[in-house]
Length: 54
Image (tube, rainbow, N blue to C red; front, side, top):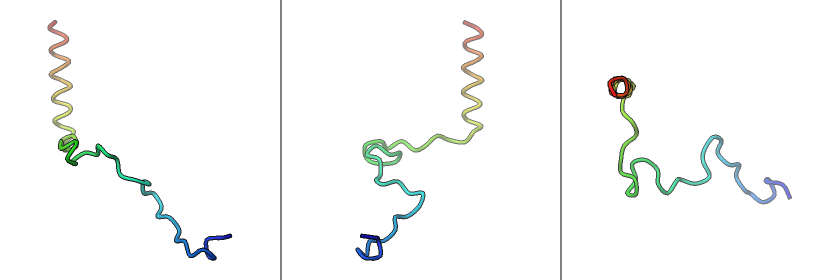
């Protein structure tokens, strides 16, 4: 039996089948996604300096 006979709609494209239980910003994982790239680069440079001194 085809979709037309059962009146089943086509699934939306590029959407997940379900939401993750621990997605960012939910009650289980309230932390927001990472900040801007400049913050990341600053942390990476600080880590490199600390490793270089040690």
